[in-house]
Length: 180
Ligand SMILES: [Fe+2]
Image 1 (cartoon, rainbow, N blue to C red):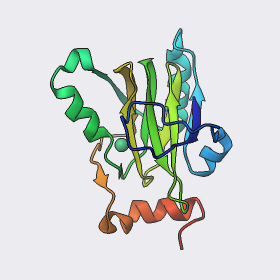
Image 2: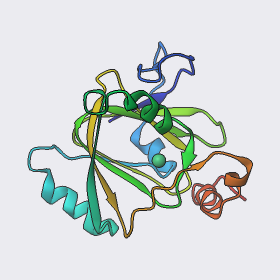
Image 3: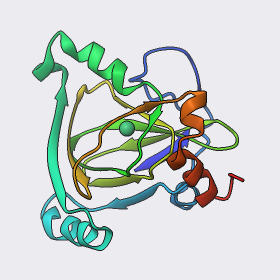
Image 4: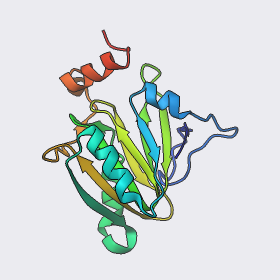
């Protein structure tokens, strides 16, 4: 896992968008935003992922597989959808089994995007209420475990003035010490 400030250049979302010089972001800074990261090598990952899942109460999981090859015509529209800024009322937890991609998370109050580049073995937890988006990179494939506590609630709440006052958004800002 590597993270850095996104360059905001308006071109293909799948490119790295890493400024020169880069502005790296540490795991500690991410943790202060409530974004948690682990690296668990894919070979024999099951026990360690199970341990994290047990500790954090993730009782269920499934696997998501996204690739240009597998999706054909629908691929471009699908990844544009992932890239719409949104939040959820639950944590978003992903463990990368193969392929790669980018999770962008909004820093508050700067409103800057921080890009988190994920690779096989990366386990990422986005807290409820954080604005974020996702894209595959130029390799156009990723396979990931999605972990969840109970029933999956994948409902994305697009960023808006209404979402800004969603209880989970307000609770998130309070938890990171930004909200009232
Ligand atoms: Fe999401």
